[in-house]
Image 1 (cartoon, rainbow, N blue to C red):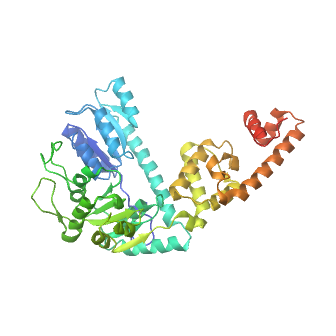
Image 2 (image 1 turned 60 degrees about the vertical axis):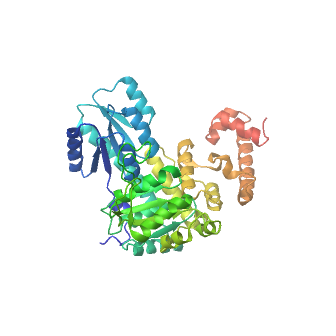
Image 3 (image 1 turned 180 degrees about the horizontal axis):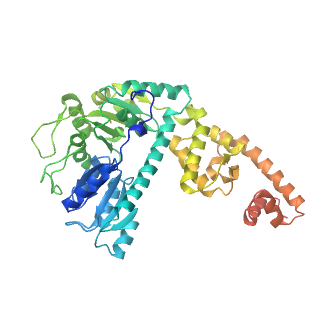
Length: 449
């Protein structure tokens, strides 16, 4: 089977671990051990370079020595989490105090191991982190590869035709539709899948730093440039550069990006050497770039260079057949992760999900299913489990549904109170809720006795 035979991109994913330690022997030893378990590895011995490396490389996990020269491990951990919040960090040290351990956990470390390291336990934990990461990626696969709708089937076909080519791609779509998912798919089923995929969110990096992130800088080129730093184009090499939210890039940065697209060369800030770039560029935006061109906020020449191929991801409201299957898929995922047994969505809830406009798209649906899984106390999600904004009277889409639900709920409450002869404890048991919830509902529907 070839890569274009409709395989989701998780089939080709590697889990990459970076070791940050000032002892080269420790770095090499851990790299060798993890490579035996099929992990991709790299290491960094300079704590000042580590945040830049993390920003320009796709790293899933960092193994960090808490005692480093120039910068404490705890402070470095804080910087790493600012640069890449989704990257997991495990602290490794022979000197960690209780205070250090507490600080490390507060800043987001998942665990702390004392030297000498119990390799068996460490590898077991890394395996668990990898499996959890791949579960999330498989959820993303489901969004595109298991959709039955014609518009998503058309998108899949385009991805599989475009991926093997070196063509520049512009991905458009509203926030939450899955633009990064499509970018990763394009890379993973391309001929460059063994090369780096380097991502930068243009909206998340201050414009004063974006040029350095993209093209790198020479030592001494500006006040804080204490070491030479490679940018994302240099790091990507012959791989792929994914520029997310490119519509937020300044006109000055756009001009420099255009040069890379036209001449396939760039220079580090403060440098004179021309560096060749053969990286494929994939860009994404949730803004109307043609409108931005009219407003003099985006360069027309850059737009036409980027949009050799344009892939539009339709919003969830345009593919309503996906909503309920996705909801069940997300619910199953969070059940497994949180040890819950929320098995069903009531008919009323499914009707609401189907009719909702989903301004936050798939991300909004995923977040809602996580919340429902956490707070639902039974096997079935009912209308009352939904956050208030999903059945607001101000939402015209749901007015009829809310009225129907209110009438049905009031009738059930009245019947329960009659059957229990007004004894609230017994009525609550009949309804499968606690007495406090019953009192709240009785007051809401004006049937307090």
